[in-house]
Length: 193
Image (cartoon, rainbow, N blue to C red; front, side, top):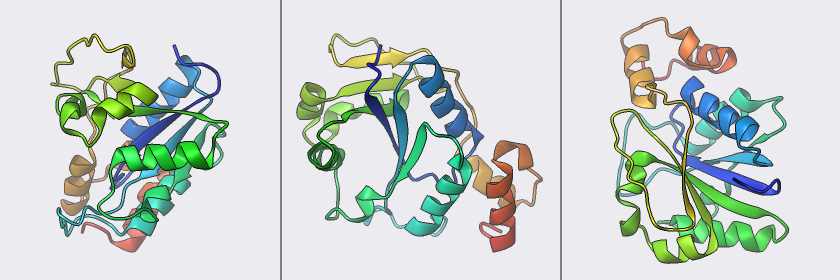
């Protein structure tokens, strides 16, 4: 179990943020008693160019719009300012130095756990930070001996940002998959049409 001063970092492109992201985050802050959860919006990977990825500030704005008014959620643009290419260990180290009174932990999906050993300085991450893993549909999560890895029993969501983008492109009415303000703003901007 987390301690009451723990801040959980939820990294992602959030392209766009949707109700699946929010439901998982809400569940973790309410049922696991984290102090806060920060949505860390990741910049476009220079190696992975994508014409479906909104620019960094637009994605940050959608996250801010989605979480507005919920005191346990924050949005962070910290990775926009770090040298590129950036690695998770750099972000964790920077945040720990900038906010020494806070205790940061990392949230990843079960699909990312399979390749976690390939992350830069993954051992250093495990030595200095707790890693919380939420199960993803269709992904088998192995229990680990590592003391700093906890598999969370959170609801599984089958919503993905790629599904959202494709549905918008096909002009489907998917208003119940996204926060209302986010959905309306996406339609106004004409993104993914």
